[in-house]
Image: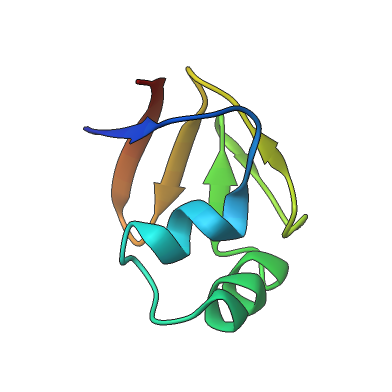
Length: 70
């Protein structure tokens, strides 16, 4: 499991995928989220602008990420 440091809360889910380089663009992130390819805290998440906080866990493409407020 990898830790992603965030500098503020909340952060929108699609922005995390984009800024961490997991997808090429914000548009791609939004499409993948809407398609149900991302899980947050163990549940499929389809809200592109889901507000994420420290301690939340993201599962995407077989990897797990935990958010940490830096």
